[in-house]
Amino acid sequence: MRLLEGKNIIVTGASRGIGNGIANKLAEQGANIAFTYLSSELEAKKLESNIKDKGVKCIGYKSDASDFDSANKLISSVLEDFGSIDVLINNAGITRDNLILRMKEDDWNNVIKINLNSVFNLTKSVLGFMLKNRSGSIINISSVVGLKGNAGQSNYAASKSGIIGFSKSIALEVGSRNIRCNVVAPGFIETEMTDSLSDKYVDEWKQKIPLKRLGTTNDIANTVLFLSSDLSSYITGQVIPVCGGMLT
Ligand code: NAP
Image (cartoon, rainbow, N blue to C red):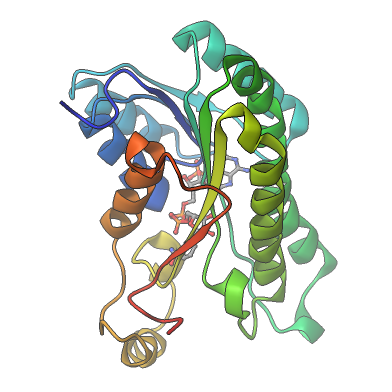
């Protein structure tokens, strides 16, 4: 028996990177997947067809997670198309790095809007259904940077710390209705988000990681699988760093 047989799961920002890895992994465990993307049409079509090949239902929705009305519309469409929602994974995110004195106001506002407002938008929208259904798991993708900060990423760190405070509060608000809310805090993961960094910078980071390697999207997807499944049914309000021991 697969761990997520018949569950309906939303993953935001799954056209590339970590979200893509999560969507594939959960589908392999029997989940039907509703995923979102913003601009990567071709990648989204490819993901939709790959996942359908695994014998589960899959629909990709072009939807801006940072826009409140779009998030509401998305949840209504998914409920219409799938009938119910068991798990929400808030993964969509961006970086606009710079030292604070050089950071433009737009870089601050866009990162907060896409990384943090999106989590509010989707969580608020999905809870209407989950509260009635008295069941659900919400998994928010933060970062180790949200726990320890990082020079040149004050906007990103603020958004990712915000996700942690938000998630713990939601866990306290809705636990009595059998709805869980947890956070995964990835370390340095190989994706397009990290591709642009120089080899020298990446090698220096590897030396600081006890497991001496960057993480993979599969490392994150395995943790999200655990939090999506009933194996984690007594876990809520927690932050799980998946970082090769970087925070140790
Ligand atoms: P990525 O490769 O850049 O992919 C980002 C995904 O988010 C894409 O599918 C993109 O869709 C989507 N997206 C961006 N803005 C969106 C919006 N407004 N609405 C809907 N979707 C949107 O990033 P990643 O490395 O996989 O990161 C995924 C998450 O993990 C992010 O929250 C990131 O902060 C977090 N994280 C990553 C690392 C790392 O080392 N990579 C470490 C810690 C945390 P389109 O392509 O269609 O625009």
